[in-house]
Length: 450
Image 1 (cartoon, rainbow, N blue to C red):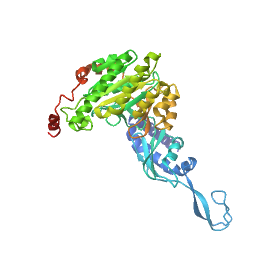
Image 2 (tube, rainbow, N blue to C red; image 1 turned 120 degrees about the horizontal axis):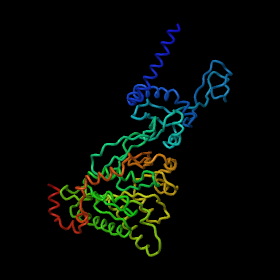
Image 3 (cartoon, rainbow, N blue to C red; image 1 turned 180 degrees about the vertical axis):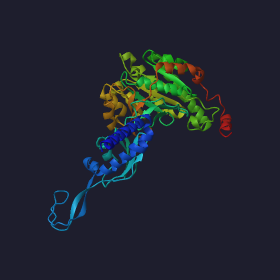
Image 4 (cartoon, helix red, strand yellow; image 1 turned 30 degrees about the vertical axis):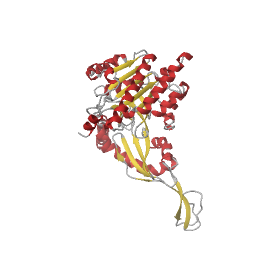
């Protein structure tokens, strides 16, 4: 008997060790074959209690039947004096079968009468704690349905190097908290604001973006008001670089002239944007990288007022009109607040892409995310200092996510800039005035219908 018990204990210990090794050596197969089935059973078995505890149930009248007249119903309130009695009971929302994902699971729930997706979003943190998972996110694919997407463990703790994107103006810069790729696509979201305090990962994200765009046929333009210390090492891949406010004024005026010239080209060809032009005459897209945006708006004395007003107007015009003509903005800064002037607020309204790293003041988080989803502000203020690169992203699908950019060192970015320097177009060629008038309308028409 004792030998049999020892054999049983040894078998259990060996099984536990094997499961531990399986989980750490190949977590994906362990999750699909062992972890998820156990989790799915737990979700189904506890859904009624969890929904009741999270306030997602509704009182409904039901006929109560008892074989013992005078017994107390399950609510503890109504005393049954007949065998049939209508009582109010808690009804849970109907839940479909959970489906596994790479980092967790997702399940569709049918809402009860009077419920909206916001009710489930407010209970998301309670749901995560009830089921012992890292996070639960809520989305609504249609009326009367919500999808609960769970991540069992934080996929942002450790990031592998992500593959390069193959499409033009698209860069994979990191991962979302759902485990999916964090993609910046300028064709879909043309202008971005990237806010973050020192050592929050803001510059690392700019490095990742530059590394992704360097192999692509695009013109990169830099405005670095730190005296050029951030973007000068990447000068081999930059068509133009402004390091002072005066140089920024000249560069922005050139960008405006390029935009007006491309307007004429599209008008001559009968196209609404440069992407409707034939590849032979389509101009290169231009991505403008701005570091320390606030420096463009800070005023030391009244003599700078006209210059700042000019910069604000030109930058706003580019944000309003540049998308159709292949000019895109990526604006970074430590401090982005309404105290910088109405120009910043108007510019913010034109930038639908929002990225907020850890910030030192609530005003910057509010300026970056507040008009999109106030619930994201709580997550933005909760980013710890020891997790650089983690940010709250207002994604192109209309929702916000926690995300983290993969680490790109300065040496890697400098090497990439030098390696792809042969793709750098000369700024004089891009900013050449009158390029649209140099092409005859009949010639453009022939190219369009060729």
